Image (cartoon, helix red, strand yellow):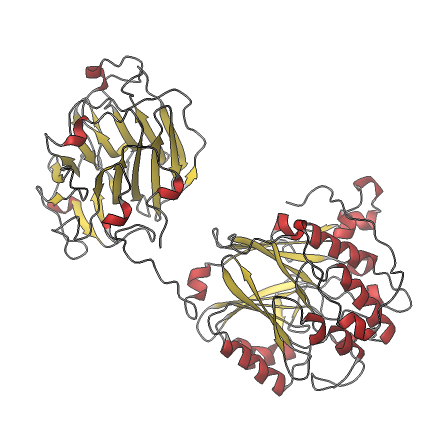
Length: 613
């Protein structure tokens, strides 16, 4: 959400104008502390600035709105993690020396603070129909010389009117291709060469004229846009987003390229709005964790004014919230980019590399830990053994609950992408009638009696089926057998509960119930609702004083503050795939369980099994 008001430094008309050559050669100022950008964060923003021409009309020029926009981008760069700004052309109204000089000077506000690209629109040039037009005031001010000092600048076409930038964001490189408003055959050949030289980079193509829109916001390719589509976009799967201005109203569409994948085509132009758009920008906020791009459109100049000081037209233009101006794109980045930059999944990690000091038990269900592992879907009969790879003697053996069929437990190659072993067990537990399978330690296993008074970390990977069908309320993931009442515990919900269990509630919350070895208490930890159809890593960490749960490496909110020292084990088996009540099992687990590990001390999240390599 936008802030109610943003402090924008006061700006006024330029006191002097740079000459064209000086403007083009302005050295990049060192970035200040407030302009830091996190290139590895999974979230970043691309700022898009369309037609500013009415702010640079010689008869009525006012660069103040654009200066405010640039101040905003520079001051908010760290907060919004703004990677780059791209101008979509028509910087000026007539492309005269005077207008170009003023625009070039105004761009000094952002120069050296946020990297950017600029391309020529039809109003920026006075002669020539394509990028072979030769020397112009625009080229002298916004040609390659202006960008040469930027760390993102990759190069320009020989004519100087087309350029590209490579920026690092979300832990990968991205390419911004800025094409002249009428790229010639030579220009398009150059662009194809750039793409060929960077075959694994996702590309945002920017140009001035690519599409027009109906009042509904539905966009269609213009004649020039169709040429770009046919010549450069549809055959290059790297181009996933194409942006243009020139026309209004704004709009968008999704086209399918030759690889069968989506290309988002957007018009961004607000020159028809009050004050020529007031330096309005559009922020494309990429979130590579949520696989979305959240888009918002606003004028920092109007936003920087106190609400009571805005005129009615400023108030209605400060932010645009229609469906063409504020929206979310759903883009599964890994899937969308797999044709040219496939993600290489982590290789399995040897067991020895995921057994830190204090590991008392580690089970994995690949052939190393489950010699009986076979083809996916193969049933694992009663008596099948999963080895404790620590060598501590805590092997697990399969038991079938009630009258369950043999296929209630099967071997699976499905796994969390960051799980050490690339295998899991598929449990088919359920109710009405109760059924399922469990894996338990033998009666004399050391794990049965460990008290963990100095703390512990219990980790596992689970996945719930999608669709999540049937009643699976309170099904167990793992536990120790026995009754807490037999340990003299009196304050819990029921004396029939086991002394330690990890379960799934009817709402798919995780519930970790602990009866400590020292205290007479049952501090219980609750998570949020875990997703279906997706692997989840769970870690329960106790430092000898209290217990904290982490889900996918993130600390949850509902961790009890009650003291908890140790686990009141009773010398009875440890169980994977179920939880007893009154020393009897009802339904077993329904879903997949992967690598499971127990360590006799508190681990930091950086030491969990979750990180891949």
